[in-house]
Image (cartoon, rainbow, N blue to C red):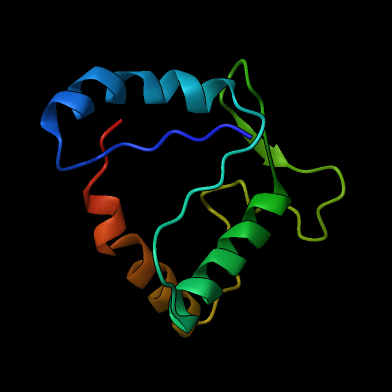
Length: 107
């Protein structure tokens, strides 16, 4: 198991290694990233986004979305289709995506 850890307070180290992160993640089979302690809202949002991802198939060459062959809900790839999420679910997703984790993107 390999890991890439950067000392964020060391600007010289950051400058040397951060440009490599895109290639490392792009070539990896699976990446696990620790974002810190979670909470119930973030966990619910991640569960729903994972469920949404299971419904979709991304065509690598074209970037087009379609319904996954075994998706129980068809049409979620279509922007005209309203997703069957409750207000609480949308609120949890917004909470997750406005978290400070997503404001410090380095790659």
